[in-house]
Image (cartoon, rainbow, N blue to C red):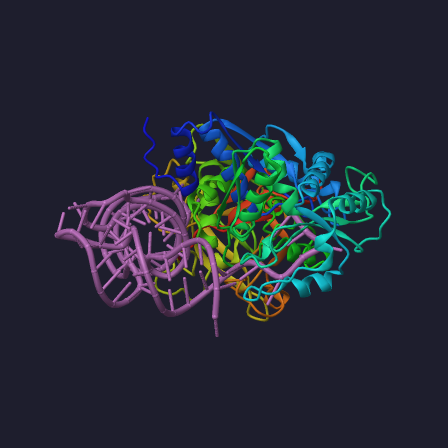
Length: 547
RNA sequence: UGUCCUAUGGUGUAAUGGUAACACAGCAGAUUUUGAUUCUGCUUUUCUAGGUUCGAAUCCUAGUAGGACAACCA
């Protein structure tokens, strides 16, 4: 029963809280801003927040942090919900910071009434000027001394649309000399005459993050509000607001966000890739977005396993992308259906096999999974094999086909290469081989032992398909460390399209969402753009290659 | 020349004052009708200097290094 796995620092806090009787149940939230698509970094946060409430009993809300109407859209909301569900989690309540706009407005008025907020007419430049620097304290300005009555009047006018964007803001009155820059009278409300994706034109003043997030947590009685390290300095302000507003004391905890080698996780830059058409949309299989990675063929199980393996801590990290690949291979190895597809075809003619004859060879769908069964592969005199599986001048440890050398056709027969036919340019165009009838797979009485086993497809039964081979989007290991334009680091070979490969006919029945291992080539999924007449497969990940 | 956070193999994460471990990666070898999988073995670790202690990765002090903070973004 005892879980031997050690706890991460947040679990330790929760267990201590629970042991102290501080809470009966915990409540967390996943708070995306609907201004982009979810990526792997969000997956870490989702698994953490939802995982915690599952483990300790409690709930997790999905709350959209939609306080900035100019960047946020409903399209993003729908995709975010879809991604969270795909990852395997269901939220207790679907909520929006905008649900609380009225309450937040009243909170602001309460602060004014307590003499803890004021309307400032300064321009943003002036405010920046007055704010000082991390080593130089800021200065009070004349607006700071406005009376409560005047502040109330002006704030009401702001709400009523009597003032232009940028002409006034509401600021918390804290301490312009505070060591924490965020405590130097932070802006808590600004004027934006903008259409909001949910509240429409009801509001023209919108709360800032620091005056919405903690309050939303509090309204929802969130016990553990978990965010990333860059919010550490915000915690002081988070607590200040809760204290002065005298509302439910949610607590904020910070963990280090996920960074991965050869991957860029910035939403802003991902948006740029999409807008500048450097990728084919948010769900391009090269993107680290959940929708991209899903289209690539990654499974939610493997992502959850990955998030579990990377752990949760407070130090900056750079996770090797090979760990992600390991997780998906590990899962797909157990579940993916095996199929044979020849990418770079070379014709093989079996000279001692009867012309016009064909027979069905059973082949296992997956030896790693019980009851996966077999499918039938037609075998005939003319086959396609991988051009790479023949070598005219084989090196020492080459186990495949070479003049005079034998190889096993997986689930078929052992063949021997008698002759390589070449065109006038000297390119090998065809192999003449003989087969050993008594070497039939599963009934081999030939006594011949070969080390090499290759995949193949019967030429007359082969089905054409398109294959998309993906590699990492960037060539630079640590994309956070670069100083120049990130576009200089794009991998020019991140997508390679093989427009005509030969697939075994069983693949005519390929279904969306079903995962395949193309023997010796990697894991693949059908692309949603596929049609009956045109099969298209995306490579999820290669097989491990120790050749 | 401020405040805060962090520091354990190549990369991550454990060890909660008592033998530094696990995973990935890498390197060997065995098995294999996928050069996959599986199995076995190996390489490589506590930032530095003091202090507390019988005993320190762990506690204290100082230093060093990395990161965060000066948006009407979140």
